[in-house]
Length: 301
Length: 257
Image 1 (cartoon, rainbow over the protein chains, first blue to last red):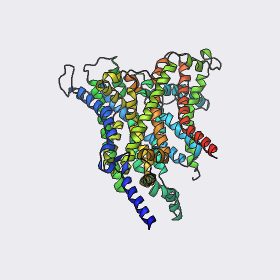
Image 2 (image 1 turned 180 degrees about the vertical axis):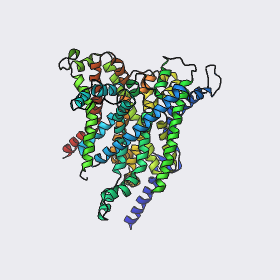
Image 3 (image 1 turned 60 degrees about the horizontal axis):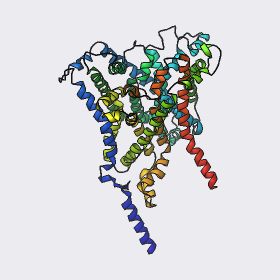
Image 4 (image 1 turned 120 degrees about the horizontal axis):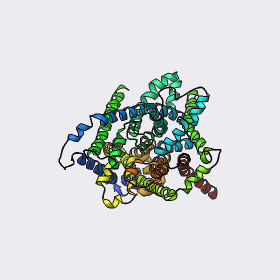
């Protein structure tokens, strides 16, 4: 009898405690969200609203939308188009390469895995002058890999490739974009249950059928959201773009950087703010397209 | 664990070439001697002779530590909270964590410049807060996926029926259970703060990456040596984070035995 009562007591006590976490009764309270919302409010929403307000004021502090019209003309329009093209291609290429590496990586384990995943963490964050110098040393006109490939009778400079032009930069971006894909896509790959492949095998399915009916449909949402991150990362890349170009390739972040650094005095002081808002707008459109695509892919499967 | 297929092996070899080739190229140049003749370590020695090496490296390491701490304190409890009882706010937080992707760092830098108070803009630690913002999408994803793969509520119930407080549960049960996800999140935030250039340079702070950019204008071979060392140095820092706890826990086990 006594044991039964004791068990009951323990059970009710645990039920009572279940809802307590860090001292808060969380299902009913908003407190658990307070830290992150405050933080994002101060360091994200507030600066953003400041740019927006600043972009609407011209040199004489009058409210105007005129500056936004300039984004669709001349070099600003060209910069947006080039940036978009670079980001899109880079996300697509790095997305597939990174996914292939993740697929191989989830089949390894232990020290090798730790080495690769920490290396991805570092590589995904390389950029700027260090990255530029490494690629120039390897693939520049005088680069050691260039010379090595020439020795193998492959002149990489025979065509339109140049480490400093659009295609060169696309190539360099792969160095941090592919590891980024590996970092964000590997967890999704890990969630693929081994039993699914076994079930497929025992039902007599081929490897192709496994890919077609199991792997690809389950991985598509994660793949899309990962490539979205890649798009954003190369769209806003600043350090590498700045180190790799000599003013020959108009990219929006570079244009903004020049305006902000104060080397150039623009006709409108708020042009930089408007360009910054323009970048946000492009990303919003891309995310909207992504959400639509996600809904479509979910309905299909 | 399944065996690697031919395609997997091909991928890994190809990737190894893609990532090691630039490093080799850079090493080839960095190991050249004075005026590019012969081989020596003179370019690597040049790095340490530059003014500001230790101070700027110190600043970047401290920024990385503070950022990592902030990320852990802010993100892990929040995502755990969402999984346990705050499911109805999940959408909202997912949205908040998606916003930093939409906002390019350059835009964030301009916004910070015109909106942050003067006292905050006078210390480089201002950068930490923005590094947290920039790493939020990646950290959220990592922790979220980690929590999805464990049966969180069972673990929490078990831990609390044994009398553990919320904080103890978080520290001793949840974080160890999602260790690889937490390490991943730490990697991202630390590597990000060690290598970040745009925010630091546009907000006019001197960190290691901005220092590298400045000194690189003086000596090409030296700065190639510096580039290689930066990359390998950051890797070593991350490897220490992975392997130090393992070594320590090994020692603990041997003491107990």
